[in-house]
Image 1: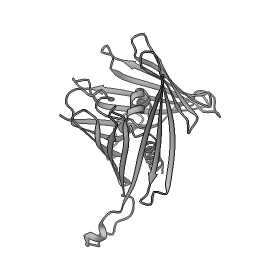
Image 2: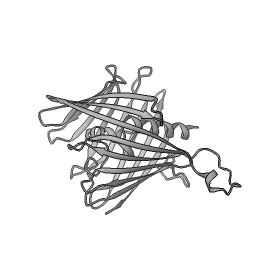
Image 3: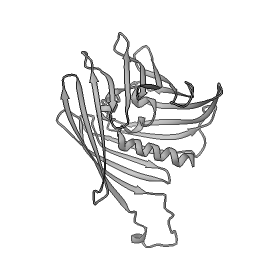
Image 4: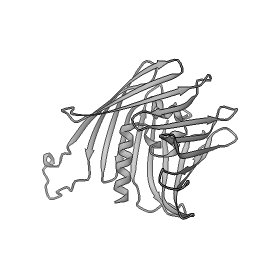
Length: 291
């Protein structure tokens, strides 16, 4: 049940902001350009002429070891010659698969996404050899974006349209605040009353990220870098309006290849109960690249 719930949350987050492999964890917020532009070779800082990137997620035990046969999803990014994501495939084991097709503005902002969803959770009749009867039913949806820049604030409007009859519409609005160095220092999520604030060190690196709900601090992310200013660790302390801060802790560690590209990400989540920290869940992301 928890696995199905987690998959549903991740899928929902993709519709809110399709930044993909880093979705639904602190690593997305560690780079505000991922929030604005989505995941591509440039915003992820990939080195080399990467044409494709595959990301697989597995479950971890309390000791940080991979659990056998625990593959949760396998995602594939396909980049164009400019490093922009032209196609993204999202495959959840025994749950659903999705394909995203991207269009961009002349400034490199995502303008439109076509999404094809296939439901894999329905039981199949293996005795039926008629291929026509076994064909999957596809569901289609789209996301449209518009942008307006005024002084140091960029507005992004998002409209989700689901179904062939286009009856279900969801609208979201975001405001990106820039400083004089053209760095994003705050993102307002108008539809959810959430605000994310970015604090930079003298070298222009993000060392702290704060997320607030109606002005109340929900979580704080602390970022750590190696000597080459590459992100290698994020620690997140969470709270909510009903419990004493903190009530949840998330630790994310990265391994990089010789190019500086991520090849492994370990995420361990702990819950606090009356001052005691207990392991809750863990995930391992493995990255493979095609050059």
